[in-house]
Length: 116
Image (cartoon, rainbow, N blue to C red; front, side, top):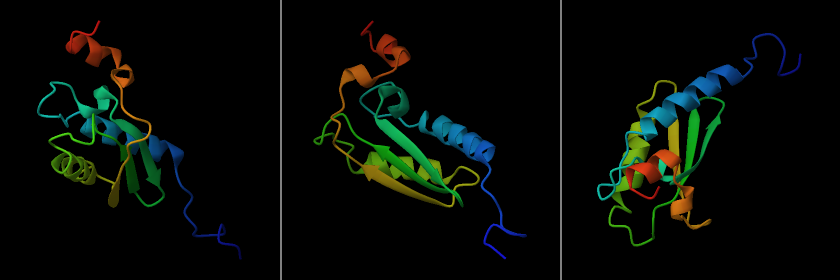
């Protein structure tokens, strides 16, 4: 019998969508202490990837490599995402390409910061 036979669980895309929504809501509670906008609205989160089994990879950046919270912010992101029901493991992939620019912010973030 194949691996897809009786008893093999198939991933549920709807469950992944719900989990992604909960993770994004949690990311919206993480703020750079110097900027009154969440890292998600700032555009610092480039991707939320969810593997079968609840393993999550967050691909993110910071406003600059010299950001004063470069060591603590990824840890806070990992802790917040790990606290979501259904998440079994979290990997933070801190990247510098593409370089973050203010154009990556949502309209809500730009409005909050007086850019529009």
